[in-house]
Length: 142
Picture 1 (cartoon, rainbow, N blue to C red):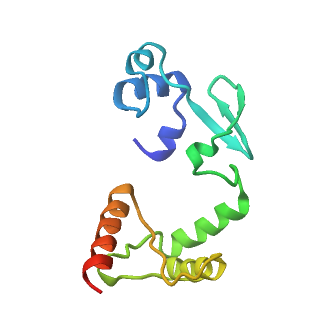
Picture 2: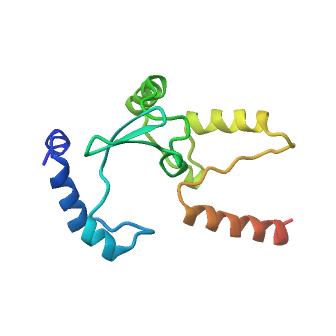
């Protein structure tokens, strides 16, 4: 199935596919199996629309991941330009790329207290792993 084919699926089909193939965290599984998901189809600003055409204010900002709102053209344009250039590269083993370097500099300049380093984590697991290592280095390697 191509991406364009997937985007043409109707909502009842998507709800059934969701029930069949997705596992949702923080969900009452029996209720989900019985009632299915709420399929969100679009967002603009703070508003979301579901597959029935009902609108909702997204007071949780996409679980705190969309706090500037949906449908922001200037953000989409910046993301598009960066994805064409270099969508992602890790910082493991001393590797670096321009966007995190420049963002780290800006964050240090904006910090209300003196700081010298920024750590960008990709997940809770690498954040926790790094935290444990930092504590060990602080207590043992100085």
